[in-house]
Image: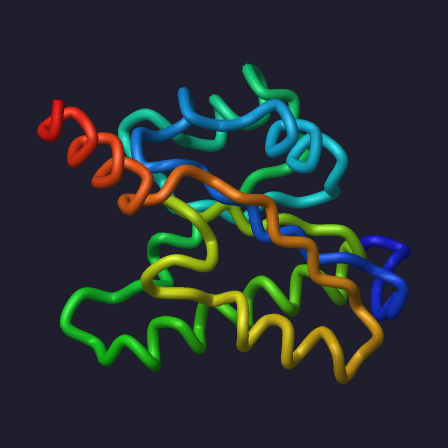
Length: 145
């Protein structure tokens, strides 16, 4: 266990990955990921623990995809993910959740994490990522030309 366990002065960073994977990470997103003790993420063929720790230089990375169980109710899946991220925040004080797309567009874990965090004095920082809406706007603009 980290000596930061139960530190209420922590921060949870919810970072948008973009819709095309790691190549859409912004410099701001990379800086946030590199400054945390633990990054929680959903493994893809392009994104794994080795890529995050060796190539991007994050301290620790944990794949939380197994917490999302196909066939289970979404609310149960999201509850498991929020519990793991918030437990990580209690243990490490400064953690990040790397989310596909934009953290506030579509399925969002931001609200339940913010609710948990505000009751404990933990800050939440949301870092934008490219969303499917960004791509649609670009496609619509191209069609109108």
